[in-house]
Image 1: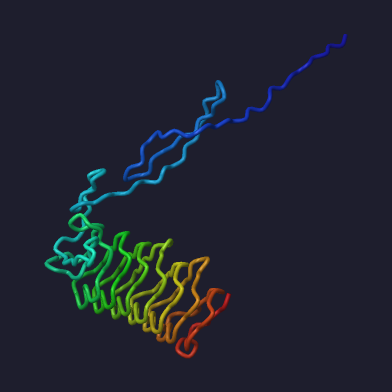
Image 2: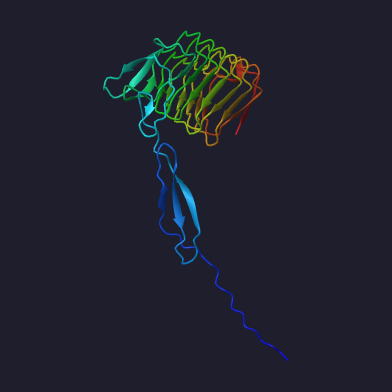
Length: 269
């Protein structure tokens, strides 16, 4: 006896995700949006983050979440000509050795570190610069002999001449990967004897004369993928005695008198 069976396979289920709904409102932290399948009986869903709206500090306290920002108190500031933002101009009466520059001062944003702001200060050991600061002035930290680390946010577009010149203890320079920094000005890191590694963001277009010379402990300098670097000035790597090799981005169109002042092997992409 022969039996015949007919088997009907169900159609493969294909999700039909509709418009997303906010399940966690974004505040100072990321929110969450949820996509749910609209097919009857499915119930599957997935989530994606909603970018945080960010902190809003007034007098060191976030008006959204109450976070207290532990910035250095007592530093001196100057209001710009338009009355819209402040520049930090000096140590003032502050006694902190770890300097944390605030996002805001008296309800207005801090957008610059002024020329000569912390020059010759032998007490500070670290500097944290907040997002929103767009410039670091000339000689701002020159001769800060005990300065060991500095954090430079993505918002900084310019660093003035000799800003960190002769910061002989400077070991760590962290520049945000998504930086807007366009130029490494002349002498910026000149004679930073303790600096071993320097990673430059893709946004940098020019390195001026002597910007990194005299960094006798420097072992590695890297240029981020997609580097827009076009110009390398004179004496950039002079006296960088531990620097063995340098890979120059293909975007570079001009290199000054560099070979004569370094023992490093220079490679071109």
